[in-house]
Length: 165
Image 1 (tube, helix red, strand yellow):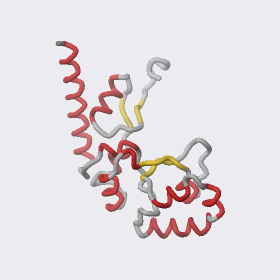
Image 2 (cartoon, one colour):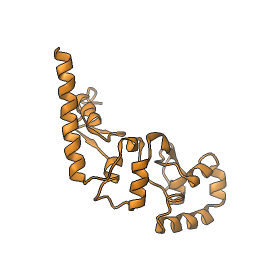
Image 3 (cartoon, rainbow, N blue to C red):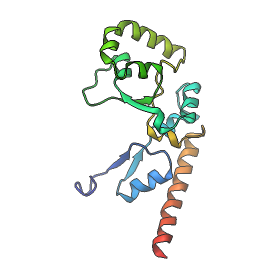
Image 4 (cartoon, rainbow, N blue to C red):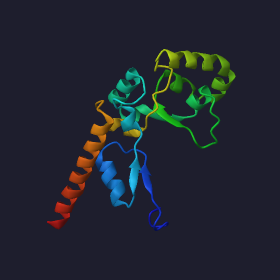
């Protein structure tokens, strides 16, 4: 995109959860990055603490992309757009059986809404991406930015030294 649109501000997104991802995007010509999951698991995040802790304990392979939670939230996204979340019993129950979800939609929406109110993340979604595998604590957003800046500079410097030698 950077090469195809000279002068355009390009923002890297998807799977960026540490300084290495930031450095990679900058080296590819991005003007910056959009960070989602890493900030989801921060002190300032409005996500419930139990959801944040599920993110801390999860890995990238614990996520799934599906329309299950779009149906339950009554969001009518066009195909092929859908949501990445941590897998949970409800996503696994309906992911391969969307007709059954549609058939039981009213009942499942009521169950889903109760789960959201109760912070029951066996039914409600933890909305994070594959970068969740890079998350192992709940620092402040300021600390996340500081770490990413430091890690990015270290990654660039380390590779520069390697190339120079």
